[in-house]
Image (cartoon, rainbow, N blue to C red; front, side, top):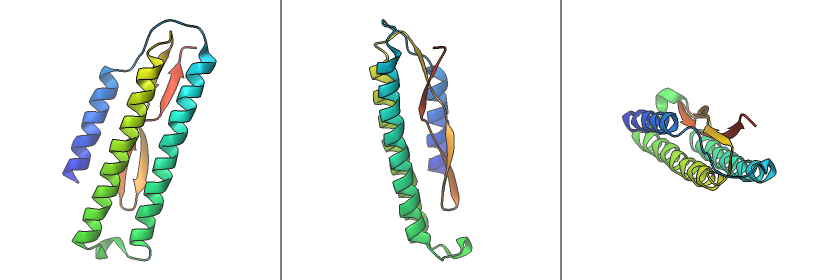
Amino acid sequence: MKKIMIIMLVIMLFTASTVTSYAGTDDLSVIYDILDNANDAIQEKIDAAVDEADDLVDGIPVEEYTPAIEDELDRICDTLIDETNLIAATAFAECGKYDVDVVCVLVPVDIANRTIMVDPLIVIGD
């Protein structure tokens, strides 16, 4: 659990320090396509992780989770954070070519008995 909290803190610091992207065109449709594709991919990763965790703990009360279950839930969360951060960073870099403000907005995701933060992207100031 400490690892998840540290990762969340790093994500928040990264997000706070790299919130805008500037460059050179007014073609917002390209930006929205990039962000829609990234956010769709992020949502697919979230849905898959939630389903995997739900299958793992189906019918097991939280107080009966074994260390193996806890470890597997940690792995699911860590993988989700890594994969969604990569998707967001790639989209953020692609949007860096255009004259728009793009931000990562941390949103909570419940994975079994855990809540983690992932960062879909939005355009501001269009």
